[in-house]
Image (cartoon, rainbow, N blue to C red; front, side, top):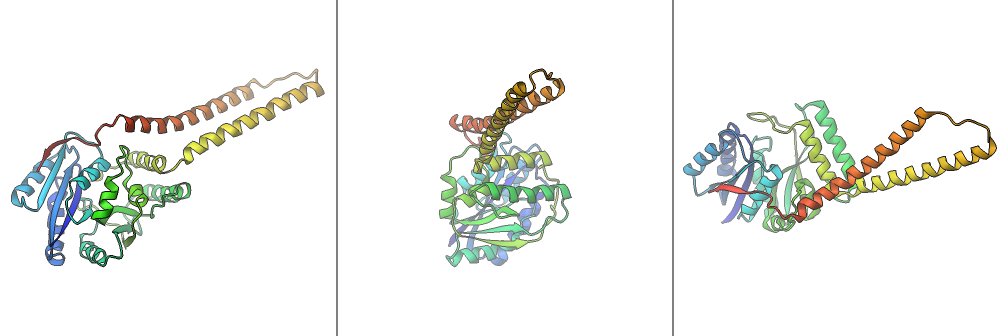
Length: 311
């Protein structure tokens, strides 16, 4: 009998967990009867009753339900990584607990992988109905931008929800990165992937913990992890500033010989130029510092997460 592990990161999801388990179990019992399915919930330092809900699920079905609880909040990427490391199945699925990922896709995903033609079956949303227009616009702009500046192409609207073969999971785990951007990693490792499309779904309970600012930082992490474009931008800004300075210097010298008695004025313009050059320098230093900071975190070899409780 083949084994399927469902990895489910959780952060303050006490209301969603029972609904998720009930919905997924219904699909498993109807469409995956010949597969041994285990759940691996990862509690990412929740401050509500998420851990109590996971303990209750484990006590009711210890053979199929397991959980990992972090010592504090390490972020969704760390929870995904921990779940993949703990997964023992021949196939591994990553799902969100809020049921925005359609559970009814699971049998179809499994059938596609059984054919041997694909190594992964992913999902992508074809719309973002129900979400704020600002978030939808920024999300679309992010995918267009990162695909232009990065060699690693990310499918627009792609979700973390996907089913992978053991070979692909092992490949993902072989990347020991401290700063992880799973959407990019899933694409970077290659392997043939088929995408299933669906319309956006609302959360079944609770509210999203992802603010616009958090999504913006997450997007910048993805750009800096899979593209050198920001560093190239700093180089080009430096070159342009240098060329403009040379042109300005030549202009001043030539003007001095052509109009020797002319007075040079315009201190306001001079201040603006100084501020402009200073701003460019600080921008470049900030970009370089961002990459150096990632290197600093990586070379310290701190663990991606710490486990407080595991069942």
